[in-house]
Length: 233
Image 1 (cartoon, rainbow, N blue to C red):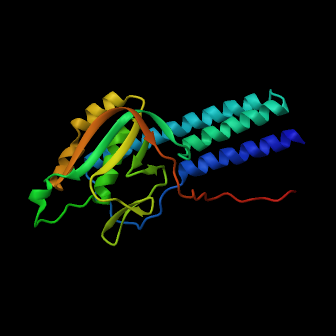
Image 2 (spheres, rainbow, N blue to C red):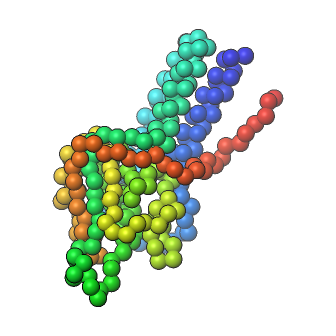
Image 3 (cartoon, rainbow, N blue to C red):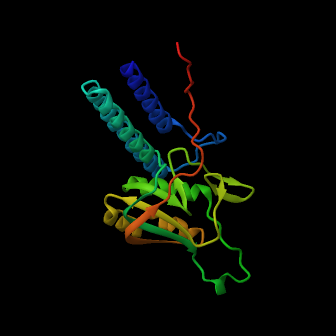
């Protein structure tokens, strides 16, 4: 009886991983007005996601093969370890490591802003920035203390920018990013095209290299589609 149970648990875990990987944010369909640079950034990001998925599939195929060669107790321990790894991959655990902190604030100081409209961080500008940091090797990201996962929505609601269905805080806004090659990521962001785009919106984008960055876990409920609970046959 243990072996069918182990295989059932393994199937559920794999289904959860694939559902999280392929789940996308549902937003109104709008006309694509991105330029070549934006399309190239998005293409590189999608290629990265695809390669990560191939790597995950290969890893869990190997795990399933290993489970079949172990006893029941070892299989349960291996499944528990796999579940913890999946939670980490899904962004459900706090992680720390080398990285950078991006800070977004008005380009003008408070005195120069007097009598002028305070700039606003547009959702599209923020999405472009995320595409860029992902292209340059970002592993984990938190915007304004909100963990970003594959299904995180970034949208405008009543003239305000929302991340994970919560409004952004007033400036300055911090974006914490973990990366295996934080030096390269920092260098790329210092000379980034995003800096120029932010400046055109009267916003200043700066990057700081940090030895220890902590990214909080994703707090909202993950909605998993295309999975059904089945009773005992």
